[in-house]
Length: 246
Image (cartoon, rainbow, N blue to C red; front, side, top):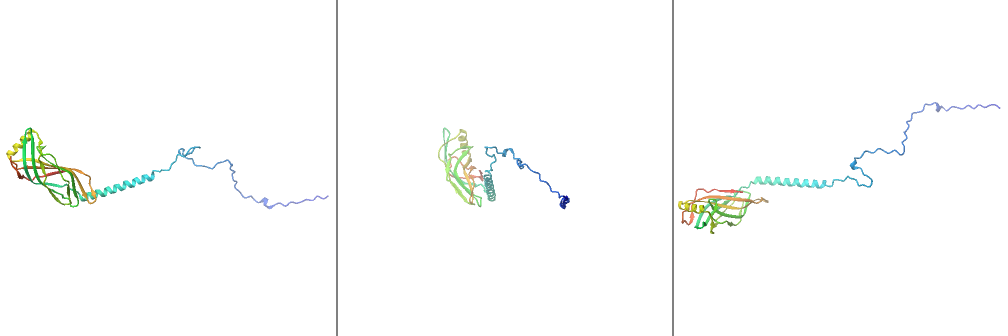
């Protein structure tokens, strides 16, 4: 038997150079993906609630800031308005005085009845003035020689003037021996120096803006041409100046 030689044809693709194909590294199935490290305070343990809480006070804080800014703006506007009006104190002037009796007894008691004509002016052109708890007293050598007399409330419109004629005294007032003797000496001389004092609470009003209450203290130093036994109107010597403190 003849041997049949089979010639195998070689595949030309076997001699062609193979193209490089990158091999993918096989990742094990149990390998986990990378996770960023979370700070300890935000990590959650099993069975525990997260410590992170949203800031619930942020809206409240913003609301408080808005209210504070609004109040500051209102305060600045009120201050500017107040400075523009510039409220001034009322002006007191003593226009006349009258004596209706002076009696001194032992132990030293003085009973005096006096009447004064007072002119009160509001110098403000846009601000009105209101005075309540108003009272008056007369003193001699820094000691009262009349009881405190309550006066009606006083209202002064802007740039206005009012007059008062209060009668002060009538009831006996205990005084020191020096005051009783000094008053008698001054009466014999014909000139008596007394002090007329007004007390009260003052409040300014400019449009819808009203101030707080302020204590008011008015002191008028007077020299009266008063002789012993004089009655009725007595001259007021000099130009008495009334000091107003608030």
